[in-house]
Amino acid sequence: MEPFPDQFMEFHPVHGTNIRLDISGTQATRVESFANGVCFSKNPLKPGEIFLIEIEEKELGWCGHLRVGLTARDPGSLEAVPEYSIPDLTDLEDSWIFAITRNHNKILDDPEVQEAGDGGLAGGRRLGRGEDEHGGEVDAGGGNMKPKMFFTDSHLCIDSVCIPRDKLVGRSRPGRYSHILDDLYKTNTLPPTARRSRIGVLYAPKGRDRADMHIVINGEDMGASAKGIPTTRPLYAVVDVFAATKCVRIVQVEYGFSSLQTLCRKAIQKHVVHRMAIDWLELPEALKHYCKYE
Image (cartoon, rainbow, N blue to C red):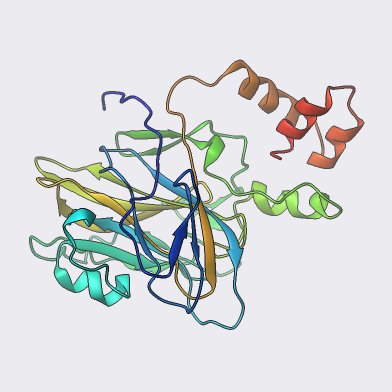
């Protein structure tokens, strides 16, 4: 795919009645109830461009979590923003939206499952992140694979789309228990609906005027959630700040070469046991904070 210039991601000024945006247009908070929290990207997404958000605040007492997806409907053309993304938007037949569950499973292609009609919702079977019965990952040949470490690959590649992995993974804030949490983050087992979890949506071109929608959770591609989506109309990201999810923030993703600062951070991280060990290094405080993702 040809590279495209980075654009500053914002939420669309058209949104659900219970949503309040901050002055930058990058943070969306549901101020009451559990519904009317539907938001959209301000601009249509380009092919391979990810709309990435981080869960900043949760609210106890509600059942259900964040919902994300794509819509071919221009938010500015809506007479009223639907109360729910599912089923209100999906019933319009030009939106593809999925609920993020507490233990979200990767969608693996099944050759025996046929794709749906031109609308393009894929079949597919859901498995627990490609796990075998003993909890370890398995490869296509049936052998066990070692857990993926966060710093192993610099980019997440989905078909012809490659996205820098640096911003995709949610992390704890440095603190008393960071040394316990680090192993969880390195193996991408941060619960999808937890605070600091990062969830993104994008579409990868598949032939002429068609694409597959992919959801990425903490740096891991969940597979093609919807196949054969028509791309003849612009596609906007949809984020439904629903129920137990109260506040989300857009994370800006840089698609160019890594900066010297980022490369230095990665070099430091490779040589420490956990992030709290960075405090013991003779480095400027600002650099320590950057290395610990503050």
